Length: 243
Image (cartoon, rainbow, N blue to C red; front, side, top):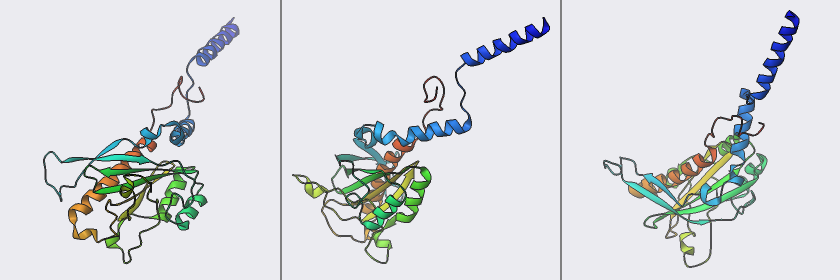
């Protein structure tokens, strides 16, 4: 009777465990999160990846205002998805780095400020892992202003978008600044300039233009990065893959 009772208890315990939602291990949770983030560039609509508008503010060293002045960058175009060649990046150096690290595709969009004075192209290189994105970023570029470099040549990065039509002049611009940041397996690249197509100039001579162009570019890139690389909800059953 004792053995039979023990067997019944063990069987009842196994039935209860089997009926409960599955519990993921720490490694399984990490794999599910990585899987979800890596698929966002396919699953999210283009208008979600690149919001119609992005808010940004100027540093207090430029304008001291309380509350701080909130500005908006407006999306004006989204380019078709491109391969990781020189169609979407500035040169073969950038293309070789991205291909080396397993780049799958590049997504790009263009934004202008509210006065149409500044324009920025933000590009997303889709890489297989966060480590690959970090490696590519390290070999491409670091935040840099043209005026701070010994030559006018900016580091390799995203190619600015060029279109035809009535607003084509907004897209035909020289990169004044260029930089990258990472968000999980995504390498977010941006390049900003003036909408009037002027060649690279010493931005440091105009502290306001330098501050707003930089703030706008970083604001847009940061918004895109957080949307793609943000942490999803904790995996649980039911609802997550593997349940």
